[in-house]
Image (tube, rainbow, N blue to C red; front, side, top):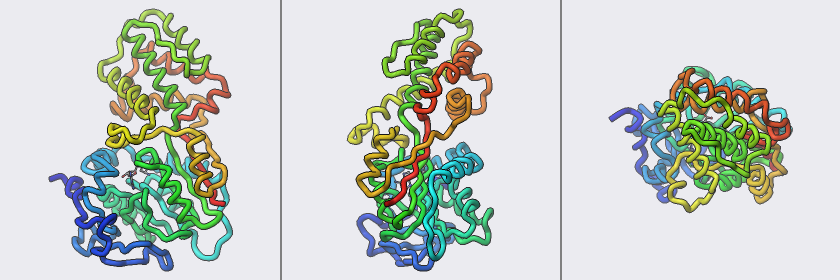
Length: 381
Ligand SMILES: C[S@@+](CC[C@H](N)C(=O)[O-])C[C@H]1O[C@@H](n2cnc3c(N)ncnc32)[C@H](O)[C@@H]1O
């Protein structure tokens, strides 16, 4: 059995139904209060030393996360390590909040820490903070623990198995909660926002980085146009697109006939992205298909404004993550690179020409408002 598959099967009790079976260790840091006991999994097996857990059952874990973060965690980690990028995002987020005066150490909870893309920069940005890293995936926590031991041998960074939809902490424990690309994986992102409000002190800050619907729909429309042109058809009309993009795509259909087709694997990737965006655009939570997916949601400003209002956060500050001049072209190439590997020649010249022209054809206002990914800063009132 591969190690990650074995890791995925750890944990015999069920934190959400059988808490009394759990060994109690209430303090991760002095004075930090949990609402339930957690055990160091190393007590049962030294291979897991340093991972705290209330011992979720396999069934509980499987209700929330799937293969990508469990048995395929190794593939996921190899693909998505990007701490310098996340450092730049967190630094940009810092411009949108200031932390309240406090006595004692700054307390940070990182949600859905995965391999540590946000944990590592947070440790560097806040060298004196008490930071708890958390995730539901044991294979990812194990990899994270190894990274932390290697990079920060002298710093105590507890690693906690925790469901982000039911946080294990007592109210008003933290000054900062950070979730990098986690909400769109959750069954109920609104619940995690409410849980974050609960465990933050007044004036505390929650920061999330998430995919947004408007920009992803625009990218999907461009992909659909490329697929149409590849099949010798004019791009379909989509009333939901900005006018300038509609006229741009109509003009693209008058380009000299494509002499090179999209490769079958590229066409499959573009088509898969369009389908994915279409399913996620219909956010119906009861949809079984949606519940089984890892990537579930796409957000908009209204979602965060309403979720924040309900639980006592101030009006959110929402900022686009890629203000670079070629942000759509770069994002499109990143999607294809992640799917197909670093294959520079994936787009034939006629398609590359269209992609490179998208950013110029959009008005500055559309570029500002059409969010592909955004940072969301919520301050607890
Ligand atoms: C896209 S990854 C992001 C990881 C990391 N924050 C980063 O930026 O690279 C999403 C993470 O959320 C975790 N996750 C998904 N659902 C969760 C849940 N209900 N509770 C805790 N973690 C969860 C996954 O295991 C995964 O590590």
